[in-house]
Each structure stands twice: as structure tokens, then as C-alpha cells.
Image 1 (cartoon, rainbow, N blue to C red):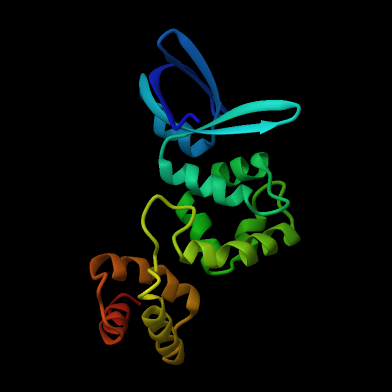
Image 2: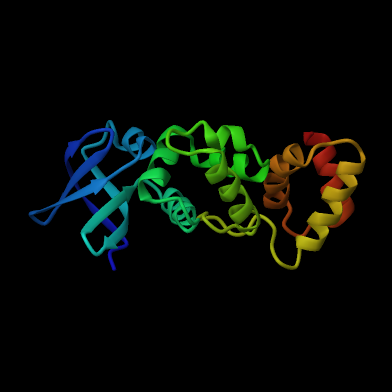
Length: 195
């Protein structure tokens, strides 16, 4: 399996990258995020997702491992194909997609061309827990298994104080990143400062 290709950018359009490595030109389908990351470069490292169906074989290229992991998470949802996932990554940033899933913002997801209400709802339903656990991300889990109960308890307390789960889920990753071993009361205090 190909993990990445490092080489010279021969051709770059908003949808395709041709990367030359040792005399071989690799054609990679890309999102606008990747296009913007490579726009001013002459060389690049593209992380690859190899897509094979009985009638076609394609390579998708990504500027970061994080974007590739999110792409793979998106295509794991039934009804979301590679074209829809690439369109999502072209329309929204990776962080906007994760926040829309965490906050159950179906309208933001539905704003992506080609995604209807049912697909957006299915995406939120199937991916919310996975995004919370850190799947589809290069970074470690947002809420580690042992700290999950603490985060849940802190979230419940903050909800009772009148904060929305969407706002709480936005600040929680940074709190846990700053202090991964925080106790419930420390998580709540840090969240109160950020909310």
C-alpha cells in the first residue's frame, strides 16, 4: 500500500495534482484544501488513499494525514462515496466538518453540494461518537477511554449551568490538550474560562 508520494509538482489544478517521483507521474485527485496547501509549492508530500472498484482505480491525495484520515472516516458512512467526501473537504475545512458533526449541525453538512438531509443526518448519527473518540484524525483521541467518564461528567455539569453541548464540545479538546490528566473540577473550571 502507498502511504505517501514525495516529489515535484508537475501540474496542479483545484481537483488534480500530478506529482513526479523518480520519473513516474502520479495523478492524484485532490480537494480544495490540498490545492490551497500546495498552490505556491514546487515540491510536495501527498498522503495517498488508494481507491479500487471493479471498474476503476484512483488515487486521492491529501496535504496532511489528518485530512486523509477524515476522508477515510467520511467514506465509511453508507451513502457517502469518495466524490461526496472530496466535495465535503473542498467546501468545509476539516475542523468545520468535525465541529458540524459534534454539534449535530445538519444544515452546515447539508450545505455541501450533493448531500441531502438524510445523508447529513446519517453522517452525524454514525460519526459523532467516532469523532469524539478521535477517529478520522491524526491527533490522539479527544476523550481518552479512561478520561471519557470525567469528560461526560464535566459536560453534564456545564450543560446544567446553561451551556450548550455544541459550545462545550468546541472547548473540550483544547482543555484536555493543555491538561490531559485534569480532574472533573479542573475541566469544569477551565471550560468556564473559555465559554
